[in-house]
Every structure is written in C-alpha cells, then in structure tokens.
Image 1 (cartoon, rainbow, N blue to C red):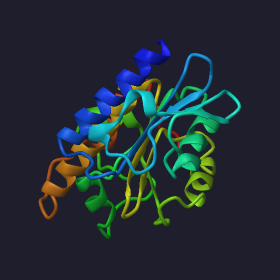
Image 2: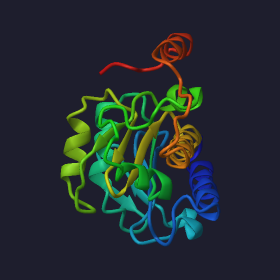
Image 3: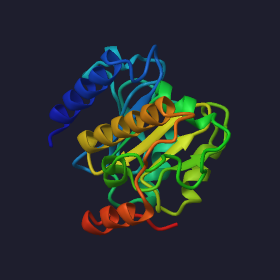
Length: 215
C-alpha cells in the first residue's frame, strides 16, 4: 500500500473507532509499517476523531523521526511489538471502557484475560495477557511486552487499555474491536452462571483456525 493510501486508511479507521466510542478525547494511538520498513504513527495529544493524514509521525526504517508531528508517548509499546513479532504490520492501543473495566475485576486470569465466550475472540486474538498497571508513557510497558518474546498478539494494560498487533491496520483494528466486544460481554455476564465454551470447544477452534495458543 502506498504511503498516501496508508495514511488515509489509518485516519479513516481511527475516526471510525472514535465515532463509535471505542476511545475518547485524545486517548489511544495507532501505528503501521510502511512499504519501506518505516512507520506511520498517530501524533501525541491528538484525537482519533481528528487525525490529519499529512501530520502523522513518519519514521524511517532505522526508527528515526523524519516527518510529521511528535509521536505518541507510547512508542516503546509499539516498537516492542514490531521488534518481537515479525508478522506485525500495525499496532493499535485504545482506552476502551469495557476492557478497562474487566481488567479491574478480582478474578480475571492474567494469562488468559478474556473468558471463552465466543469463537471470534479466540480466532482473532489468541490468549490475551493481562499486564500490571504502569504509568502512561512508561517504557516499562514496552519491556513487559518484550518479555513475552512475541508469543502474544494482544495484551491488556490493567486500568489503562488494550493493545493489539495485527498483520495490517485493518486486521489490528478488527481484532481490538473484538477484544472490546468480548470484554463487554464478560461484564454483562458478571454474576451470571453463563454457558461459556468448554476447553474442548476452545481446542477445536485453536486447531481448526491455526490459532497461536501457547503459554
């Protein structure tokens, strides 16, 4: 995809998520690999609803900022995914309400954040790792992602928001929306003896759709 087309796609998808309340104010950040191995990144302090394609932060293949506005302060988080997952073509981070709420629940599984409610979250996300709380912009978030050695495409930052890497911008956005939808379902079912997918169901999904599911 050309640089111009990628810029337009980033802004279009970001605005779509903003318009549907998946992240508000100037929260959230998004990045994508360019054809030359560089990155396009949403600038710091700019709303997803008002991103300007011409002002996206532009990095070259060596990680040097060569154009646009100053990038999000969460760059260590983004680069950690790119450096540890060769398939990562885009990274999205939102402050999505239901996933943040679920991260505060006392009985959440840190190694498998989302309960097995539907097949689609398993197919698009695999296991989601719940990471502890970090101060916004703390480089330790990136270090925590690097500590996963590329084994997870999605993490949940406790009391903060989800982060998802995908093969491209559309895939990453679809996956993070699936994460938020699944978290919303989980919150709706709090206190209810819901019929979740069995371990056998999960394994069938993992096998049929070749899902990354290692510990």
